[in-house]
Length: 524
Image (tube, rainbow, N blue to C red; front, side, top):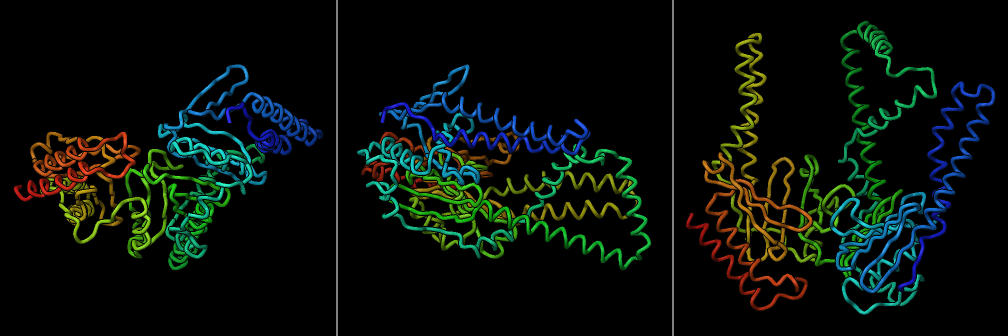
């Protein structure tokens, strides 16, 4: 498959439609303005047609000038109309291959193929657009070349031998049913709709005679409304305020449900011998494949309200990135007994009663408490001197809350290490747990500022490809013992064969590390 190829010809039609969609606002502005007077409708229509024709021409030229070649060792993409750009990405650098289909491309059976290299952003490679069958065949071929397996047939026919191998061996680990999806949305309170309405206000003065940026107009309107409210009486005012608050809550909940349904509709996580496959999305359908050996760590998070009902979210720390995070969300709304099998399939073990947890230093707790309470204490003193009597109680109460919150949070700020993994936990209103395997760690650093040196504690930063892992407030003796244990693992690991089964020497090194670490902790 070394021939030069082009993306799907339907990409030209898609480009023309996108150009026409972008011209709608300009055409509408002309139609509702005084430009052209009686001929403004024809002028608006002409602008729309011209935009479609020009967009189709540009899309055709770009399509003709964009080629890709699937070689034996890399993928080469050449693009550019006047200035040509050629980029080659070796298969060994490709971390994930994902298929993404937004609503409009899906109507034409097209997908965008994204080759994620772990560098993120513009450094990743993408082909827009291929047919769904071509995209799946290309992804399968890249995975085979990358994993140095014997190439399976690469026909674009999805029924070809090898195309369904993963489907036959796949096991569904997690899926969001419509009912659970709506429940998930109820916890995703959002007021993003107001941001959208604020953006739309920028175009109101283009199609109407209303000047939304006229301060006097808004001042006059608020004055009229204030006069009306003032004559309603206290009970009606309270009822109106409560009704307004209820409407705001309803809008926030409804917006959260809609956003969640659009983002996570049809969410399914499957596992096969090749790794994990995640599919989700209503308008934009994404299909991401994550090889199990490239999962660097786990992040188990929750929310302020979700935590009270036992709901959590699981993300994989990977060399590639998700749309809005450095981690791939694989179970956004699940119970802990559902998260356990997913973690086990990725080669991780969740903490249990035998996990050797250790809390952060008590001096770190004291310093953090004093730091967070200090601004409120300063406001209390200033209010007691300059403000009316009794007002100082407000910042004083906030200072007491800050002290109590930090003392309580210290109970949840913990870290642990065993023969195979490292753990960190923080947060008490919505606790977050991070887990990483010691075999994937490539560095360890002990950081201390002046206050930390005085307090005898440190922050331990563990190098983890694709993410970050830190333990805060670790007593310095524990930090040094932890560093020694991790370095023992690093020195015993042959990273050239990291994906192979552990050798005898590596297993012995891992087993020997934990006792030494525990002994040092007992000595402290």
